[in-house]
Image (tube, rainbow, N blue to C red):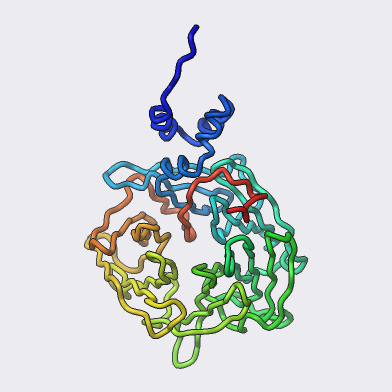
Length: 360
């Protein structure tokens, strides 16, 4: 029987339509197939917008095939079998690897690097104090001048509504270098403040957390940590009123904050025009929803790279908004009234191993 040659263009078009598990098996067909499937450009060409969502008690969902029409999205449980521990916090993603913090009912934690595409994971060592029963640590994941020295930051901050522990040194933080595989403790780095969220937003060498100020009313402001120099500073935010459903994120490569409209159906999007310059904030978009059954606060789930914003309403129904066009629509076929999802992140598939995450 003569060999049948499949042109690469045709093979590429076929393989891009396959699910992840089939694609990974087909890497074993031949060296040529393995090379084609492992090519980052191939993975990028088949990637579709995907949001990772931690769902209690023990699931990590992928919401992909985000619709541009009325098709229902595909929801996949990425942990099969699920990793132990009952609560997931997604700290960040880099090069197809997700950093998870897993917590059990006694607030005992562990940190895991996980590739949802290949289901390969790596458990990281964590400092002894971080394994103890503290529910209010803050986290960050990023790098300084170059991405070849990724760092994990654990700050001993106070979270809003958490119990105060007078025995902890709130100004210290622990830094894990994935390049050296070691932890170091830095003193008097993060200011002793009340932090709103446990996960920081990374942008251009800085990690940002929102903190709560009680001077002149309850307000929201920013802590900015220079990951290279490990120096922190504070700055004001626009429209400083505090509300649990407001969010911090990245929109088209710039830091943004999403402020819900109190007693209204919508939100405003503010953008920091110049990174680190607090007086450069400007209101970029305003989104108003006309759904009759949506009234009250919206919670931001994820800001996509193309600028669309995914929110959930008070009945836990997902809505995808395009502020630049002033359009919005419900994501049909995906709702979970009995479970409140935490914030998600956009994920890009890769074959990178968690052990090689710092190799770009």
